[in-house]
Image 1 (tube, rainbow, N blue to C red):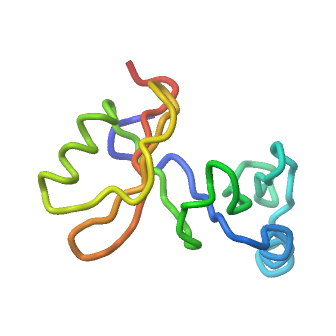
Image 2 (cartoon, rainbow, N blue to C red):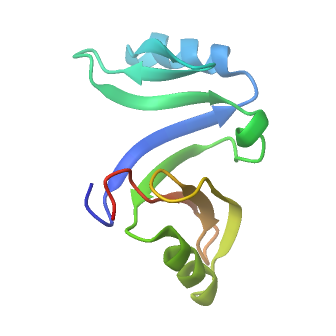
Length: 120
C-alpha cells in the first residue's frame, strides 16, 4: 500500500446490525462476517467497507465513516498531526504494521492513519 493512499473505509456504530442491513438494502452490499463485525462486499465480491460494533477497542471511535490513510511510520505521523495543529482522537492502537490512530485535522475533520501490514 502506498503512503498517502486510502486503504479502507469503516463505520463504527452502536447498532451495527441495523446499519449493516441499511447499506445492504440501499447500496446492495453483501455482509460477510468478520469476527463480530462485517466486511461489506460490493456486488462483484470485492471488499467495499467495514461495519463495526462500537464496543471494546472500538468504543471510542466516532460514529462516522472513517477513511484509513496509509502512512509509513505511524508514530512519526501522529507526532506530525499534533505539531501541525491537529489532535489525536483515539489510539494509537496496535503496534507496528496494522496499527492505527484516529486523528482530527485543524478544521475538525476526522480520519484514521494506518501503518499497513506491508510497510517497513
